[in-house]
Length: 298
Image 1 (cartoon, rainbow, N blue to C red):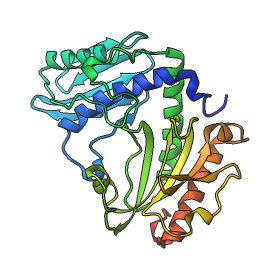
Image 2: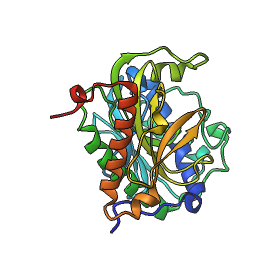
Image 3: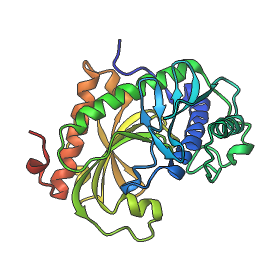
Image 4: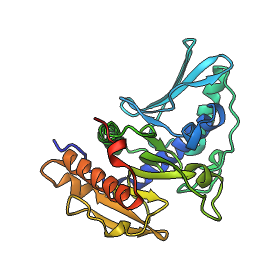
């Protein structure tokens, strides 16, 4: 069995869009109720053995957790006092119905978050309570989505362990729907002129970021990526491995890209992805002047 399942974007785009919006609703609840952490670390979701989870979120009655169970196809809300509410995820469950079910079940547990019910950088601009159009849920591709998340999370966790500097957890940002990991050099940098609040917090320090997304209108196929912020001169002239990896222009900067299908076709997909991540890190670290010897785990 290939380490990464095949998951072509067009085959499941409607389901992907619906899941993306479901995750935005749950992610906004975490954003509203979790204590603030630097660089927006209180915002993302995390891969679990069964799907995606908020992990623990404090509230007046203790703590609660929301988990997408992508094996039994349910959304479960559990509390530290033993409370539990859940409901089924199925084809035809609109974003509007999902939204009302989440908040109704939270209310049963005495949890009443306040969120702005509008998508953020998502495939729809319709407010969540009014979105009856996005309602696709193909269980076959939801299963491949979960298998892919687990496989990518495993690789990124291994890669994370090679670095002893400040690093994010491996987490899923629900606004862009990508699984990401960021390394920090420790150096503070000027914020780009015109940057919004989100960008100002995310890029206050020099970083090299890595991740995976399932494809979008700009890159219409699943891919691993890496970038450096701020981007140093000469970055895109640096070599990448494996040979199928390449630099691509993106919003005036450069992304290192390794398409999932290229990784899948290699003799050792996991090794190919780790080689890609390491080559992108070395490219960024060399051109930005990071002390790689000091930041490498022994």
